[in-house]
Length: 239
Image 1 (spheres, helix red, strand yellow):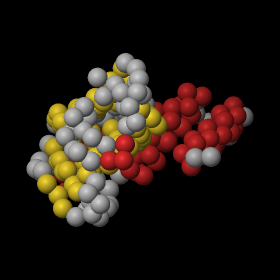
Image 2: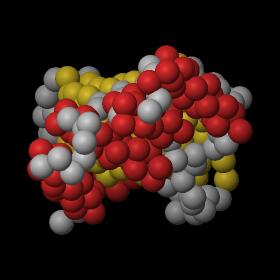
Image 3: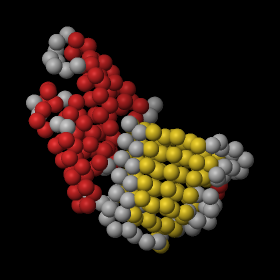
C-alpha cells in the first residue's frame, strides 16, 4: 500500500469522524461542506509542504482560512486580503528560495540558466554517459525541445507558469526513461512519440491530468511519468 494512499485514507476517516462529531454538537458552527473542503485543502497543504511548493502551501492555507473564517473569527480578512497575502507571500518566497532541484551527482552540466522568476534549464551527463534534463519554470512560459541521445530522466517543474516539452527528437538510454513532473498553479504539456509505451502515474490534487491521442506502443521504448499536479493541468500529447 502506498504511503500517499494511507495518508488520504486516514485523512478521510478523520473527516468522517469530524462530520459525525459535528452532528452531535461537538464542533459547533462547523458544517458538513466546511469539513469536506477542509479535508481536501489540508491534504493539498501537506503535499505542498512535502514538495516545498510555496504557492500550494500558502494558497491552500488561504482557502482553509476562507472556509473556516467564522470559526477562526477572521471574517474581515476574507476573501481578498487573505488571497492577496498568499499571492504576495508566494512571490516573495519564490524570490528568496527559488531553487527546488532534487539532489543528485552529475559529472558535468551544459545549457543555460534563466533568472529567478523565469526559466532554469539544464542538460546534465552522468558518469555512465546517460543524460538527465532539469527544467523549472516560475511565473513564465517556455517551450523546450529535448534532443538527448541517451535520455535517462527528466525533472520538470511549472509553478505559476507554462511549460511545453517535446520528446520526439530524443533517444532513450536502454529503451527506458523516467519523467518526474511537479505542477502547481500552472500548466505543462508533454509531447511524446506515438510509438513509445507511456506509463502515467501522476497524482492530482485539485488538478487535471489528460492524455490526448493513443499510444501504439509498437517500439521498445518505454517512458514512465509520475509526480504531482496541484491546482494546475498536465496534458500528454502523442505525436
